[in-house]
Image (tube, rainbow, N blue to C red; front, side, top):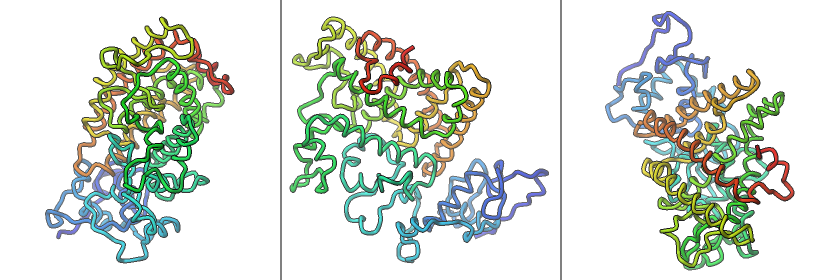
Length: 449
């Protein structure tokens, strides 16, 4: 096994990562290093990860190949002087991972598997659910009570001690809002009790209980029903409330307080995108790649694919003909979304972190016209930061490389989603109650141009 060395003076300038040669952003753990190597070293030390090199420790660790071998990368971090004792492992993290116990250290080839390890007393309750899991088909696992409890942690905590990257905190926030959304869509006491029951959603035979099968997070056992205009109004009210809660957590969004109209412009552009992306995310969770599912259990189904018994228009007297035509137009758009967005994302194994990044990019859209130069700069900086953090997150979790390919796929989805969201919003304007939000009408008024 060879030794590593690097001559920082040969670079002729300060600001080069001593580990991989990329641009450094400061001293971390005693060494001038980049954010990627800083995060990698912190994570390896925090989780006491052990790696094995397949090439006897002779791997090149450079800017373009630093992810190829984690064993050699960690060795080089230590060789150039990164101090393990400088990594501050929080007490809660030590308790969760039992880092003081030598027997808890395991050999890892993909450190992402260790992202959301349960506390020792919960390890037999069910499979761990790392935040880098694929979204496709994850709904059933997410709805298991032990997994849900593990993901959500304490309701009073802002972020669990298991959040390593900023995207992990965003994913935790999504999980919290996801279960809150489920409760808001419940129609019966049985459904609510199924969500909060200490006994969990499974029957003695291990299958989903009858009550839980009807909870809106998953399609009903009898098949998916066609969405109506009423469904869209209901879902829009819930999703709008969740969107306002989510953006209020963003520090850079709060910095737009001096320009409230710029805030409004961003929200007006973002609202239909948030709604549509959540439809896509929910569909992937439910393993639906042939139709777009709404979080309340309905689906935007084309006229050719729906059951003849489905009422395709409105249930509440909005006007049957108008409702029917509107839903037909929306369902036609949904078919395009399935083909151009849903299927490609499913085929490429999109993860929660990637969709969170896409959500952030849809908010921080530099193409939205803003009045203030300062606001435009905040948006531009936030978008650049999101792209950079996406690359870091993928670098941490992509065992087989292909980071740039994944980023290219997501960036290609951005204009497609923006176009579909604009069409979606335009069609929904013909639904009279779509912009009505009892008790929260100020939100609807703000978003209605």
